[in-house]
Image 1 (cartoon, rainbow, N blue to C red):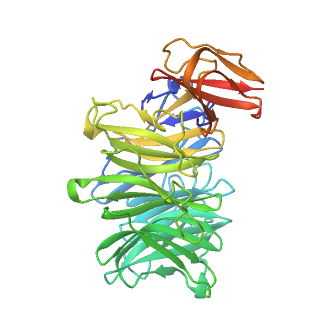
Image 2 (cartoon, rainbow, N blue to C red; image 1 turned 30 degrees about the vertical axis):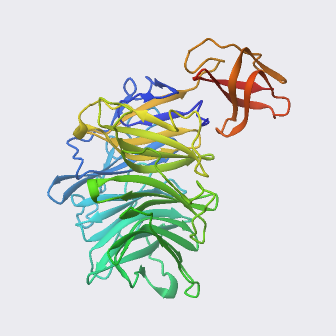
Image 3 (tube, rainbow, N blue to C red; image 1 turned 30 degrees about the horizontal axis):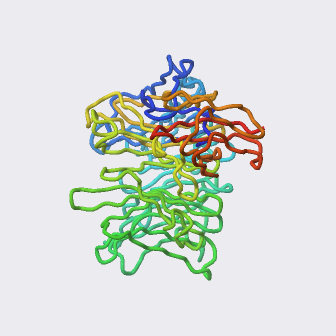
Length: 509
């Protein structure tokens, strides 16, 4: 069972959970539970958004194409109560260089948001694609004003060897900015890595280079979609085409020492033709990667999570294979993002549905698994909680963007519809000994207990789980279970009798 009894879920569109947990709208959040970012005429095909959380506030950077190749750029700060912070920028909105009077390259109408990160000092760094050929970094203060001390009047721009430069990821680690992406050098696709100080000063990397370039001699195309820095190493995740075959691609690079060899792992999953890693996280000294696989035939696709060690070897302790393909079969599944809370990994995705909710064709969901790839018993249905959309029209279903989870179990999810909406909900567990299905009245007593747990009927099967959802013991044909050998704490029991499944929370004192 996922430990979410006091958690808060922020959804950027009106929804309800279909599953074991109840969902309660927090009417004190925003305007009767809803906060709307004041951005008009959003277009799904051209819109991009990146979010970070900071001190329970949410910063959202948005770019939206107004006319062909011309993007409008803005940043909003949403407070913990769902209100837009009117002291941020100009009346709650900070556009590029608004109210600064800084004539910096005049890129305010041609900058597309690529990535966003924060520093230890609560400054915000935003990575932009400029005019589809170069990149720029903007440093914004917590109040929404551009930091003119950063780079040249608040901005650092760069282009790799005069080639079309496509930045893909920015992170802030130990006082330094790291950027990765790819570019095309005379029809040879290469990955680049650059680094800057928090004041915009360019760092020299190994061999005194201003940027590192990575290419594979046998590759037709190579892409970098995400990176993770653990100085002095950087891990790059993406995909590669060798001899017209698509493969997952992960690379480990030392940023300073030329004498230390880079490590590379390229692999495929049988019978799938397209393989892309689009997010990487370092968790408990292991690398977790989110990816997608697809077949050209019938446009079949699905998603997966993989676990690698720091030598880039698949960790077979994760689902016995090193990766876990979405357990939703016979449907098209996309993972858009994932995040980690405590010892649980949460995926945020979308399913082209065939059976769960027959009246709509697409449904969004949150999935939960352990860090070893095990499904979490009791989290929704089959470790998934489905989100019910406002619309039944396929083309209008809200598009998931990002999930951010803070240490106090606050979930921040972004969706795109015709507007960006933010809502706040509470996930609630039952607080008394009560059947999940309310079928066949069953009495469980005493609770709490420090010895035996009794049932008013003999049961065919009773399963005992810890709060993480791990199965501890299975009993058969009993009317009581002995808890004396178990430590004090909260447990979950599942009873099965005549195909009737019920769940209860038990406190061992």
